[in-house]
Image 1 (tube, rainbow, N blue to C red):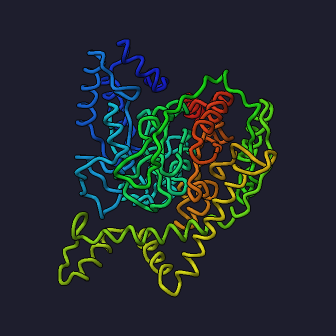
Image 2: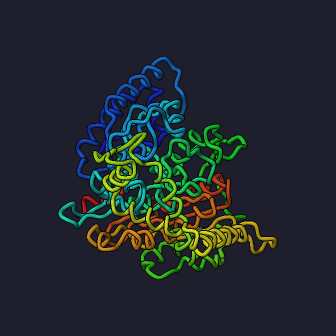
Image 3: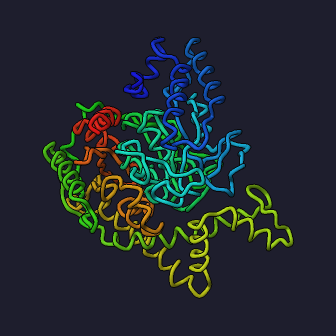
Length: 508
């Protein structure tokens, strides 16, 4: 293993400053490693020329002692549904297979301005509609923790940001950007044994993120440690004039205390009883209990709370998802950009044939279902009711975070991220896309419905040697406390992704 991979982002850039490491050599090794691990299919596009150019420029800045900040020279990957100037953005679909955006998404622009080195674009489910990164035109992404890569006996990476999670877990980059609509960053983070953050809705700009569900989409961050996650968040967060949904107040950069300075005695932890659901594995339940006990032993108050509309949440999410998908996918007609069918007998025929060829079955199904739910006769019965229940779900969180009685209020919710360890591809593929998402997103999508921040952190390995993770959620704009508690748990469980992965590989 490359020695520098064991370093965090702060230690890496310190190595650049004192001359022990070079951004160019780190980028060259990352590109070499990405080539040797092609079997993972984490990347759909390697931007080798751009990466080397950015690394050279970074090395020059360090030589002249004018570093741009904590991400200067740090290798990153970006999910292939974020627009990147002069680099293809395909959404892993035939519809956008040849699309090269003329501009950067705000998140990408801020990373470039900070001096980050873009290795390439990562794989995803087509248009981010999935929970396994198995529905891409480039083929599925495989989990680095898989016992075998033969036939269908490998483990899924989760989705839809599976390429980003797989790249970070394999040590191909220090951080990656994903998107999170119903858990698409936290789900693969859980399966791949890395940290996955979904910030508060509106904290990070969605400009240039090709939309799936506008009211829930959030740029997500994947790293191997909480501290690295904070470095990336501090770079990409903040108001954006190009996105009217960003929070207008200036972003105050987070500074986490040292682990030994974290005092949990005034912390109130809630354990939602509804998350102890059907399908929750014994090992995940044991992990959940173990971390709750750790927090209680450190002085935190831990008690059970209720989020009564949790059971309805996955159905509401599914309805709203499909309705917004139907609207967002209407722009792909073969006229202005993207795939264009050869059949030009009429405008109507061109539209129909273009969409028939450009979308896979999952996307088509969601478009058809969404349009059905939005018909005048169905609008009130499905879409309106779903919006009302979504408000009730958001109110459930508000009641536990902002309860009038102090003894009923909590600061953090502790839940599973996924119900089990990463499943085998053959088992996952046996389910329909709808059932895949219903199982994989059960614990994660309520946070998107309420717009609150959530983070998945790896805790330990299962008996099969696969990562098991837990999720923390908090009130809107409470990332400081959320990530402070995540950092404390991280220090207690001492889960090191790369070291654990080496031990796992040696045991096979």
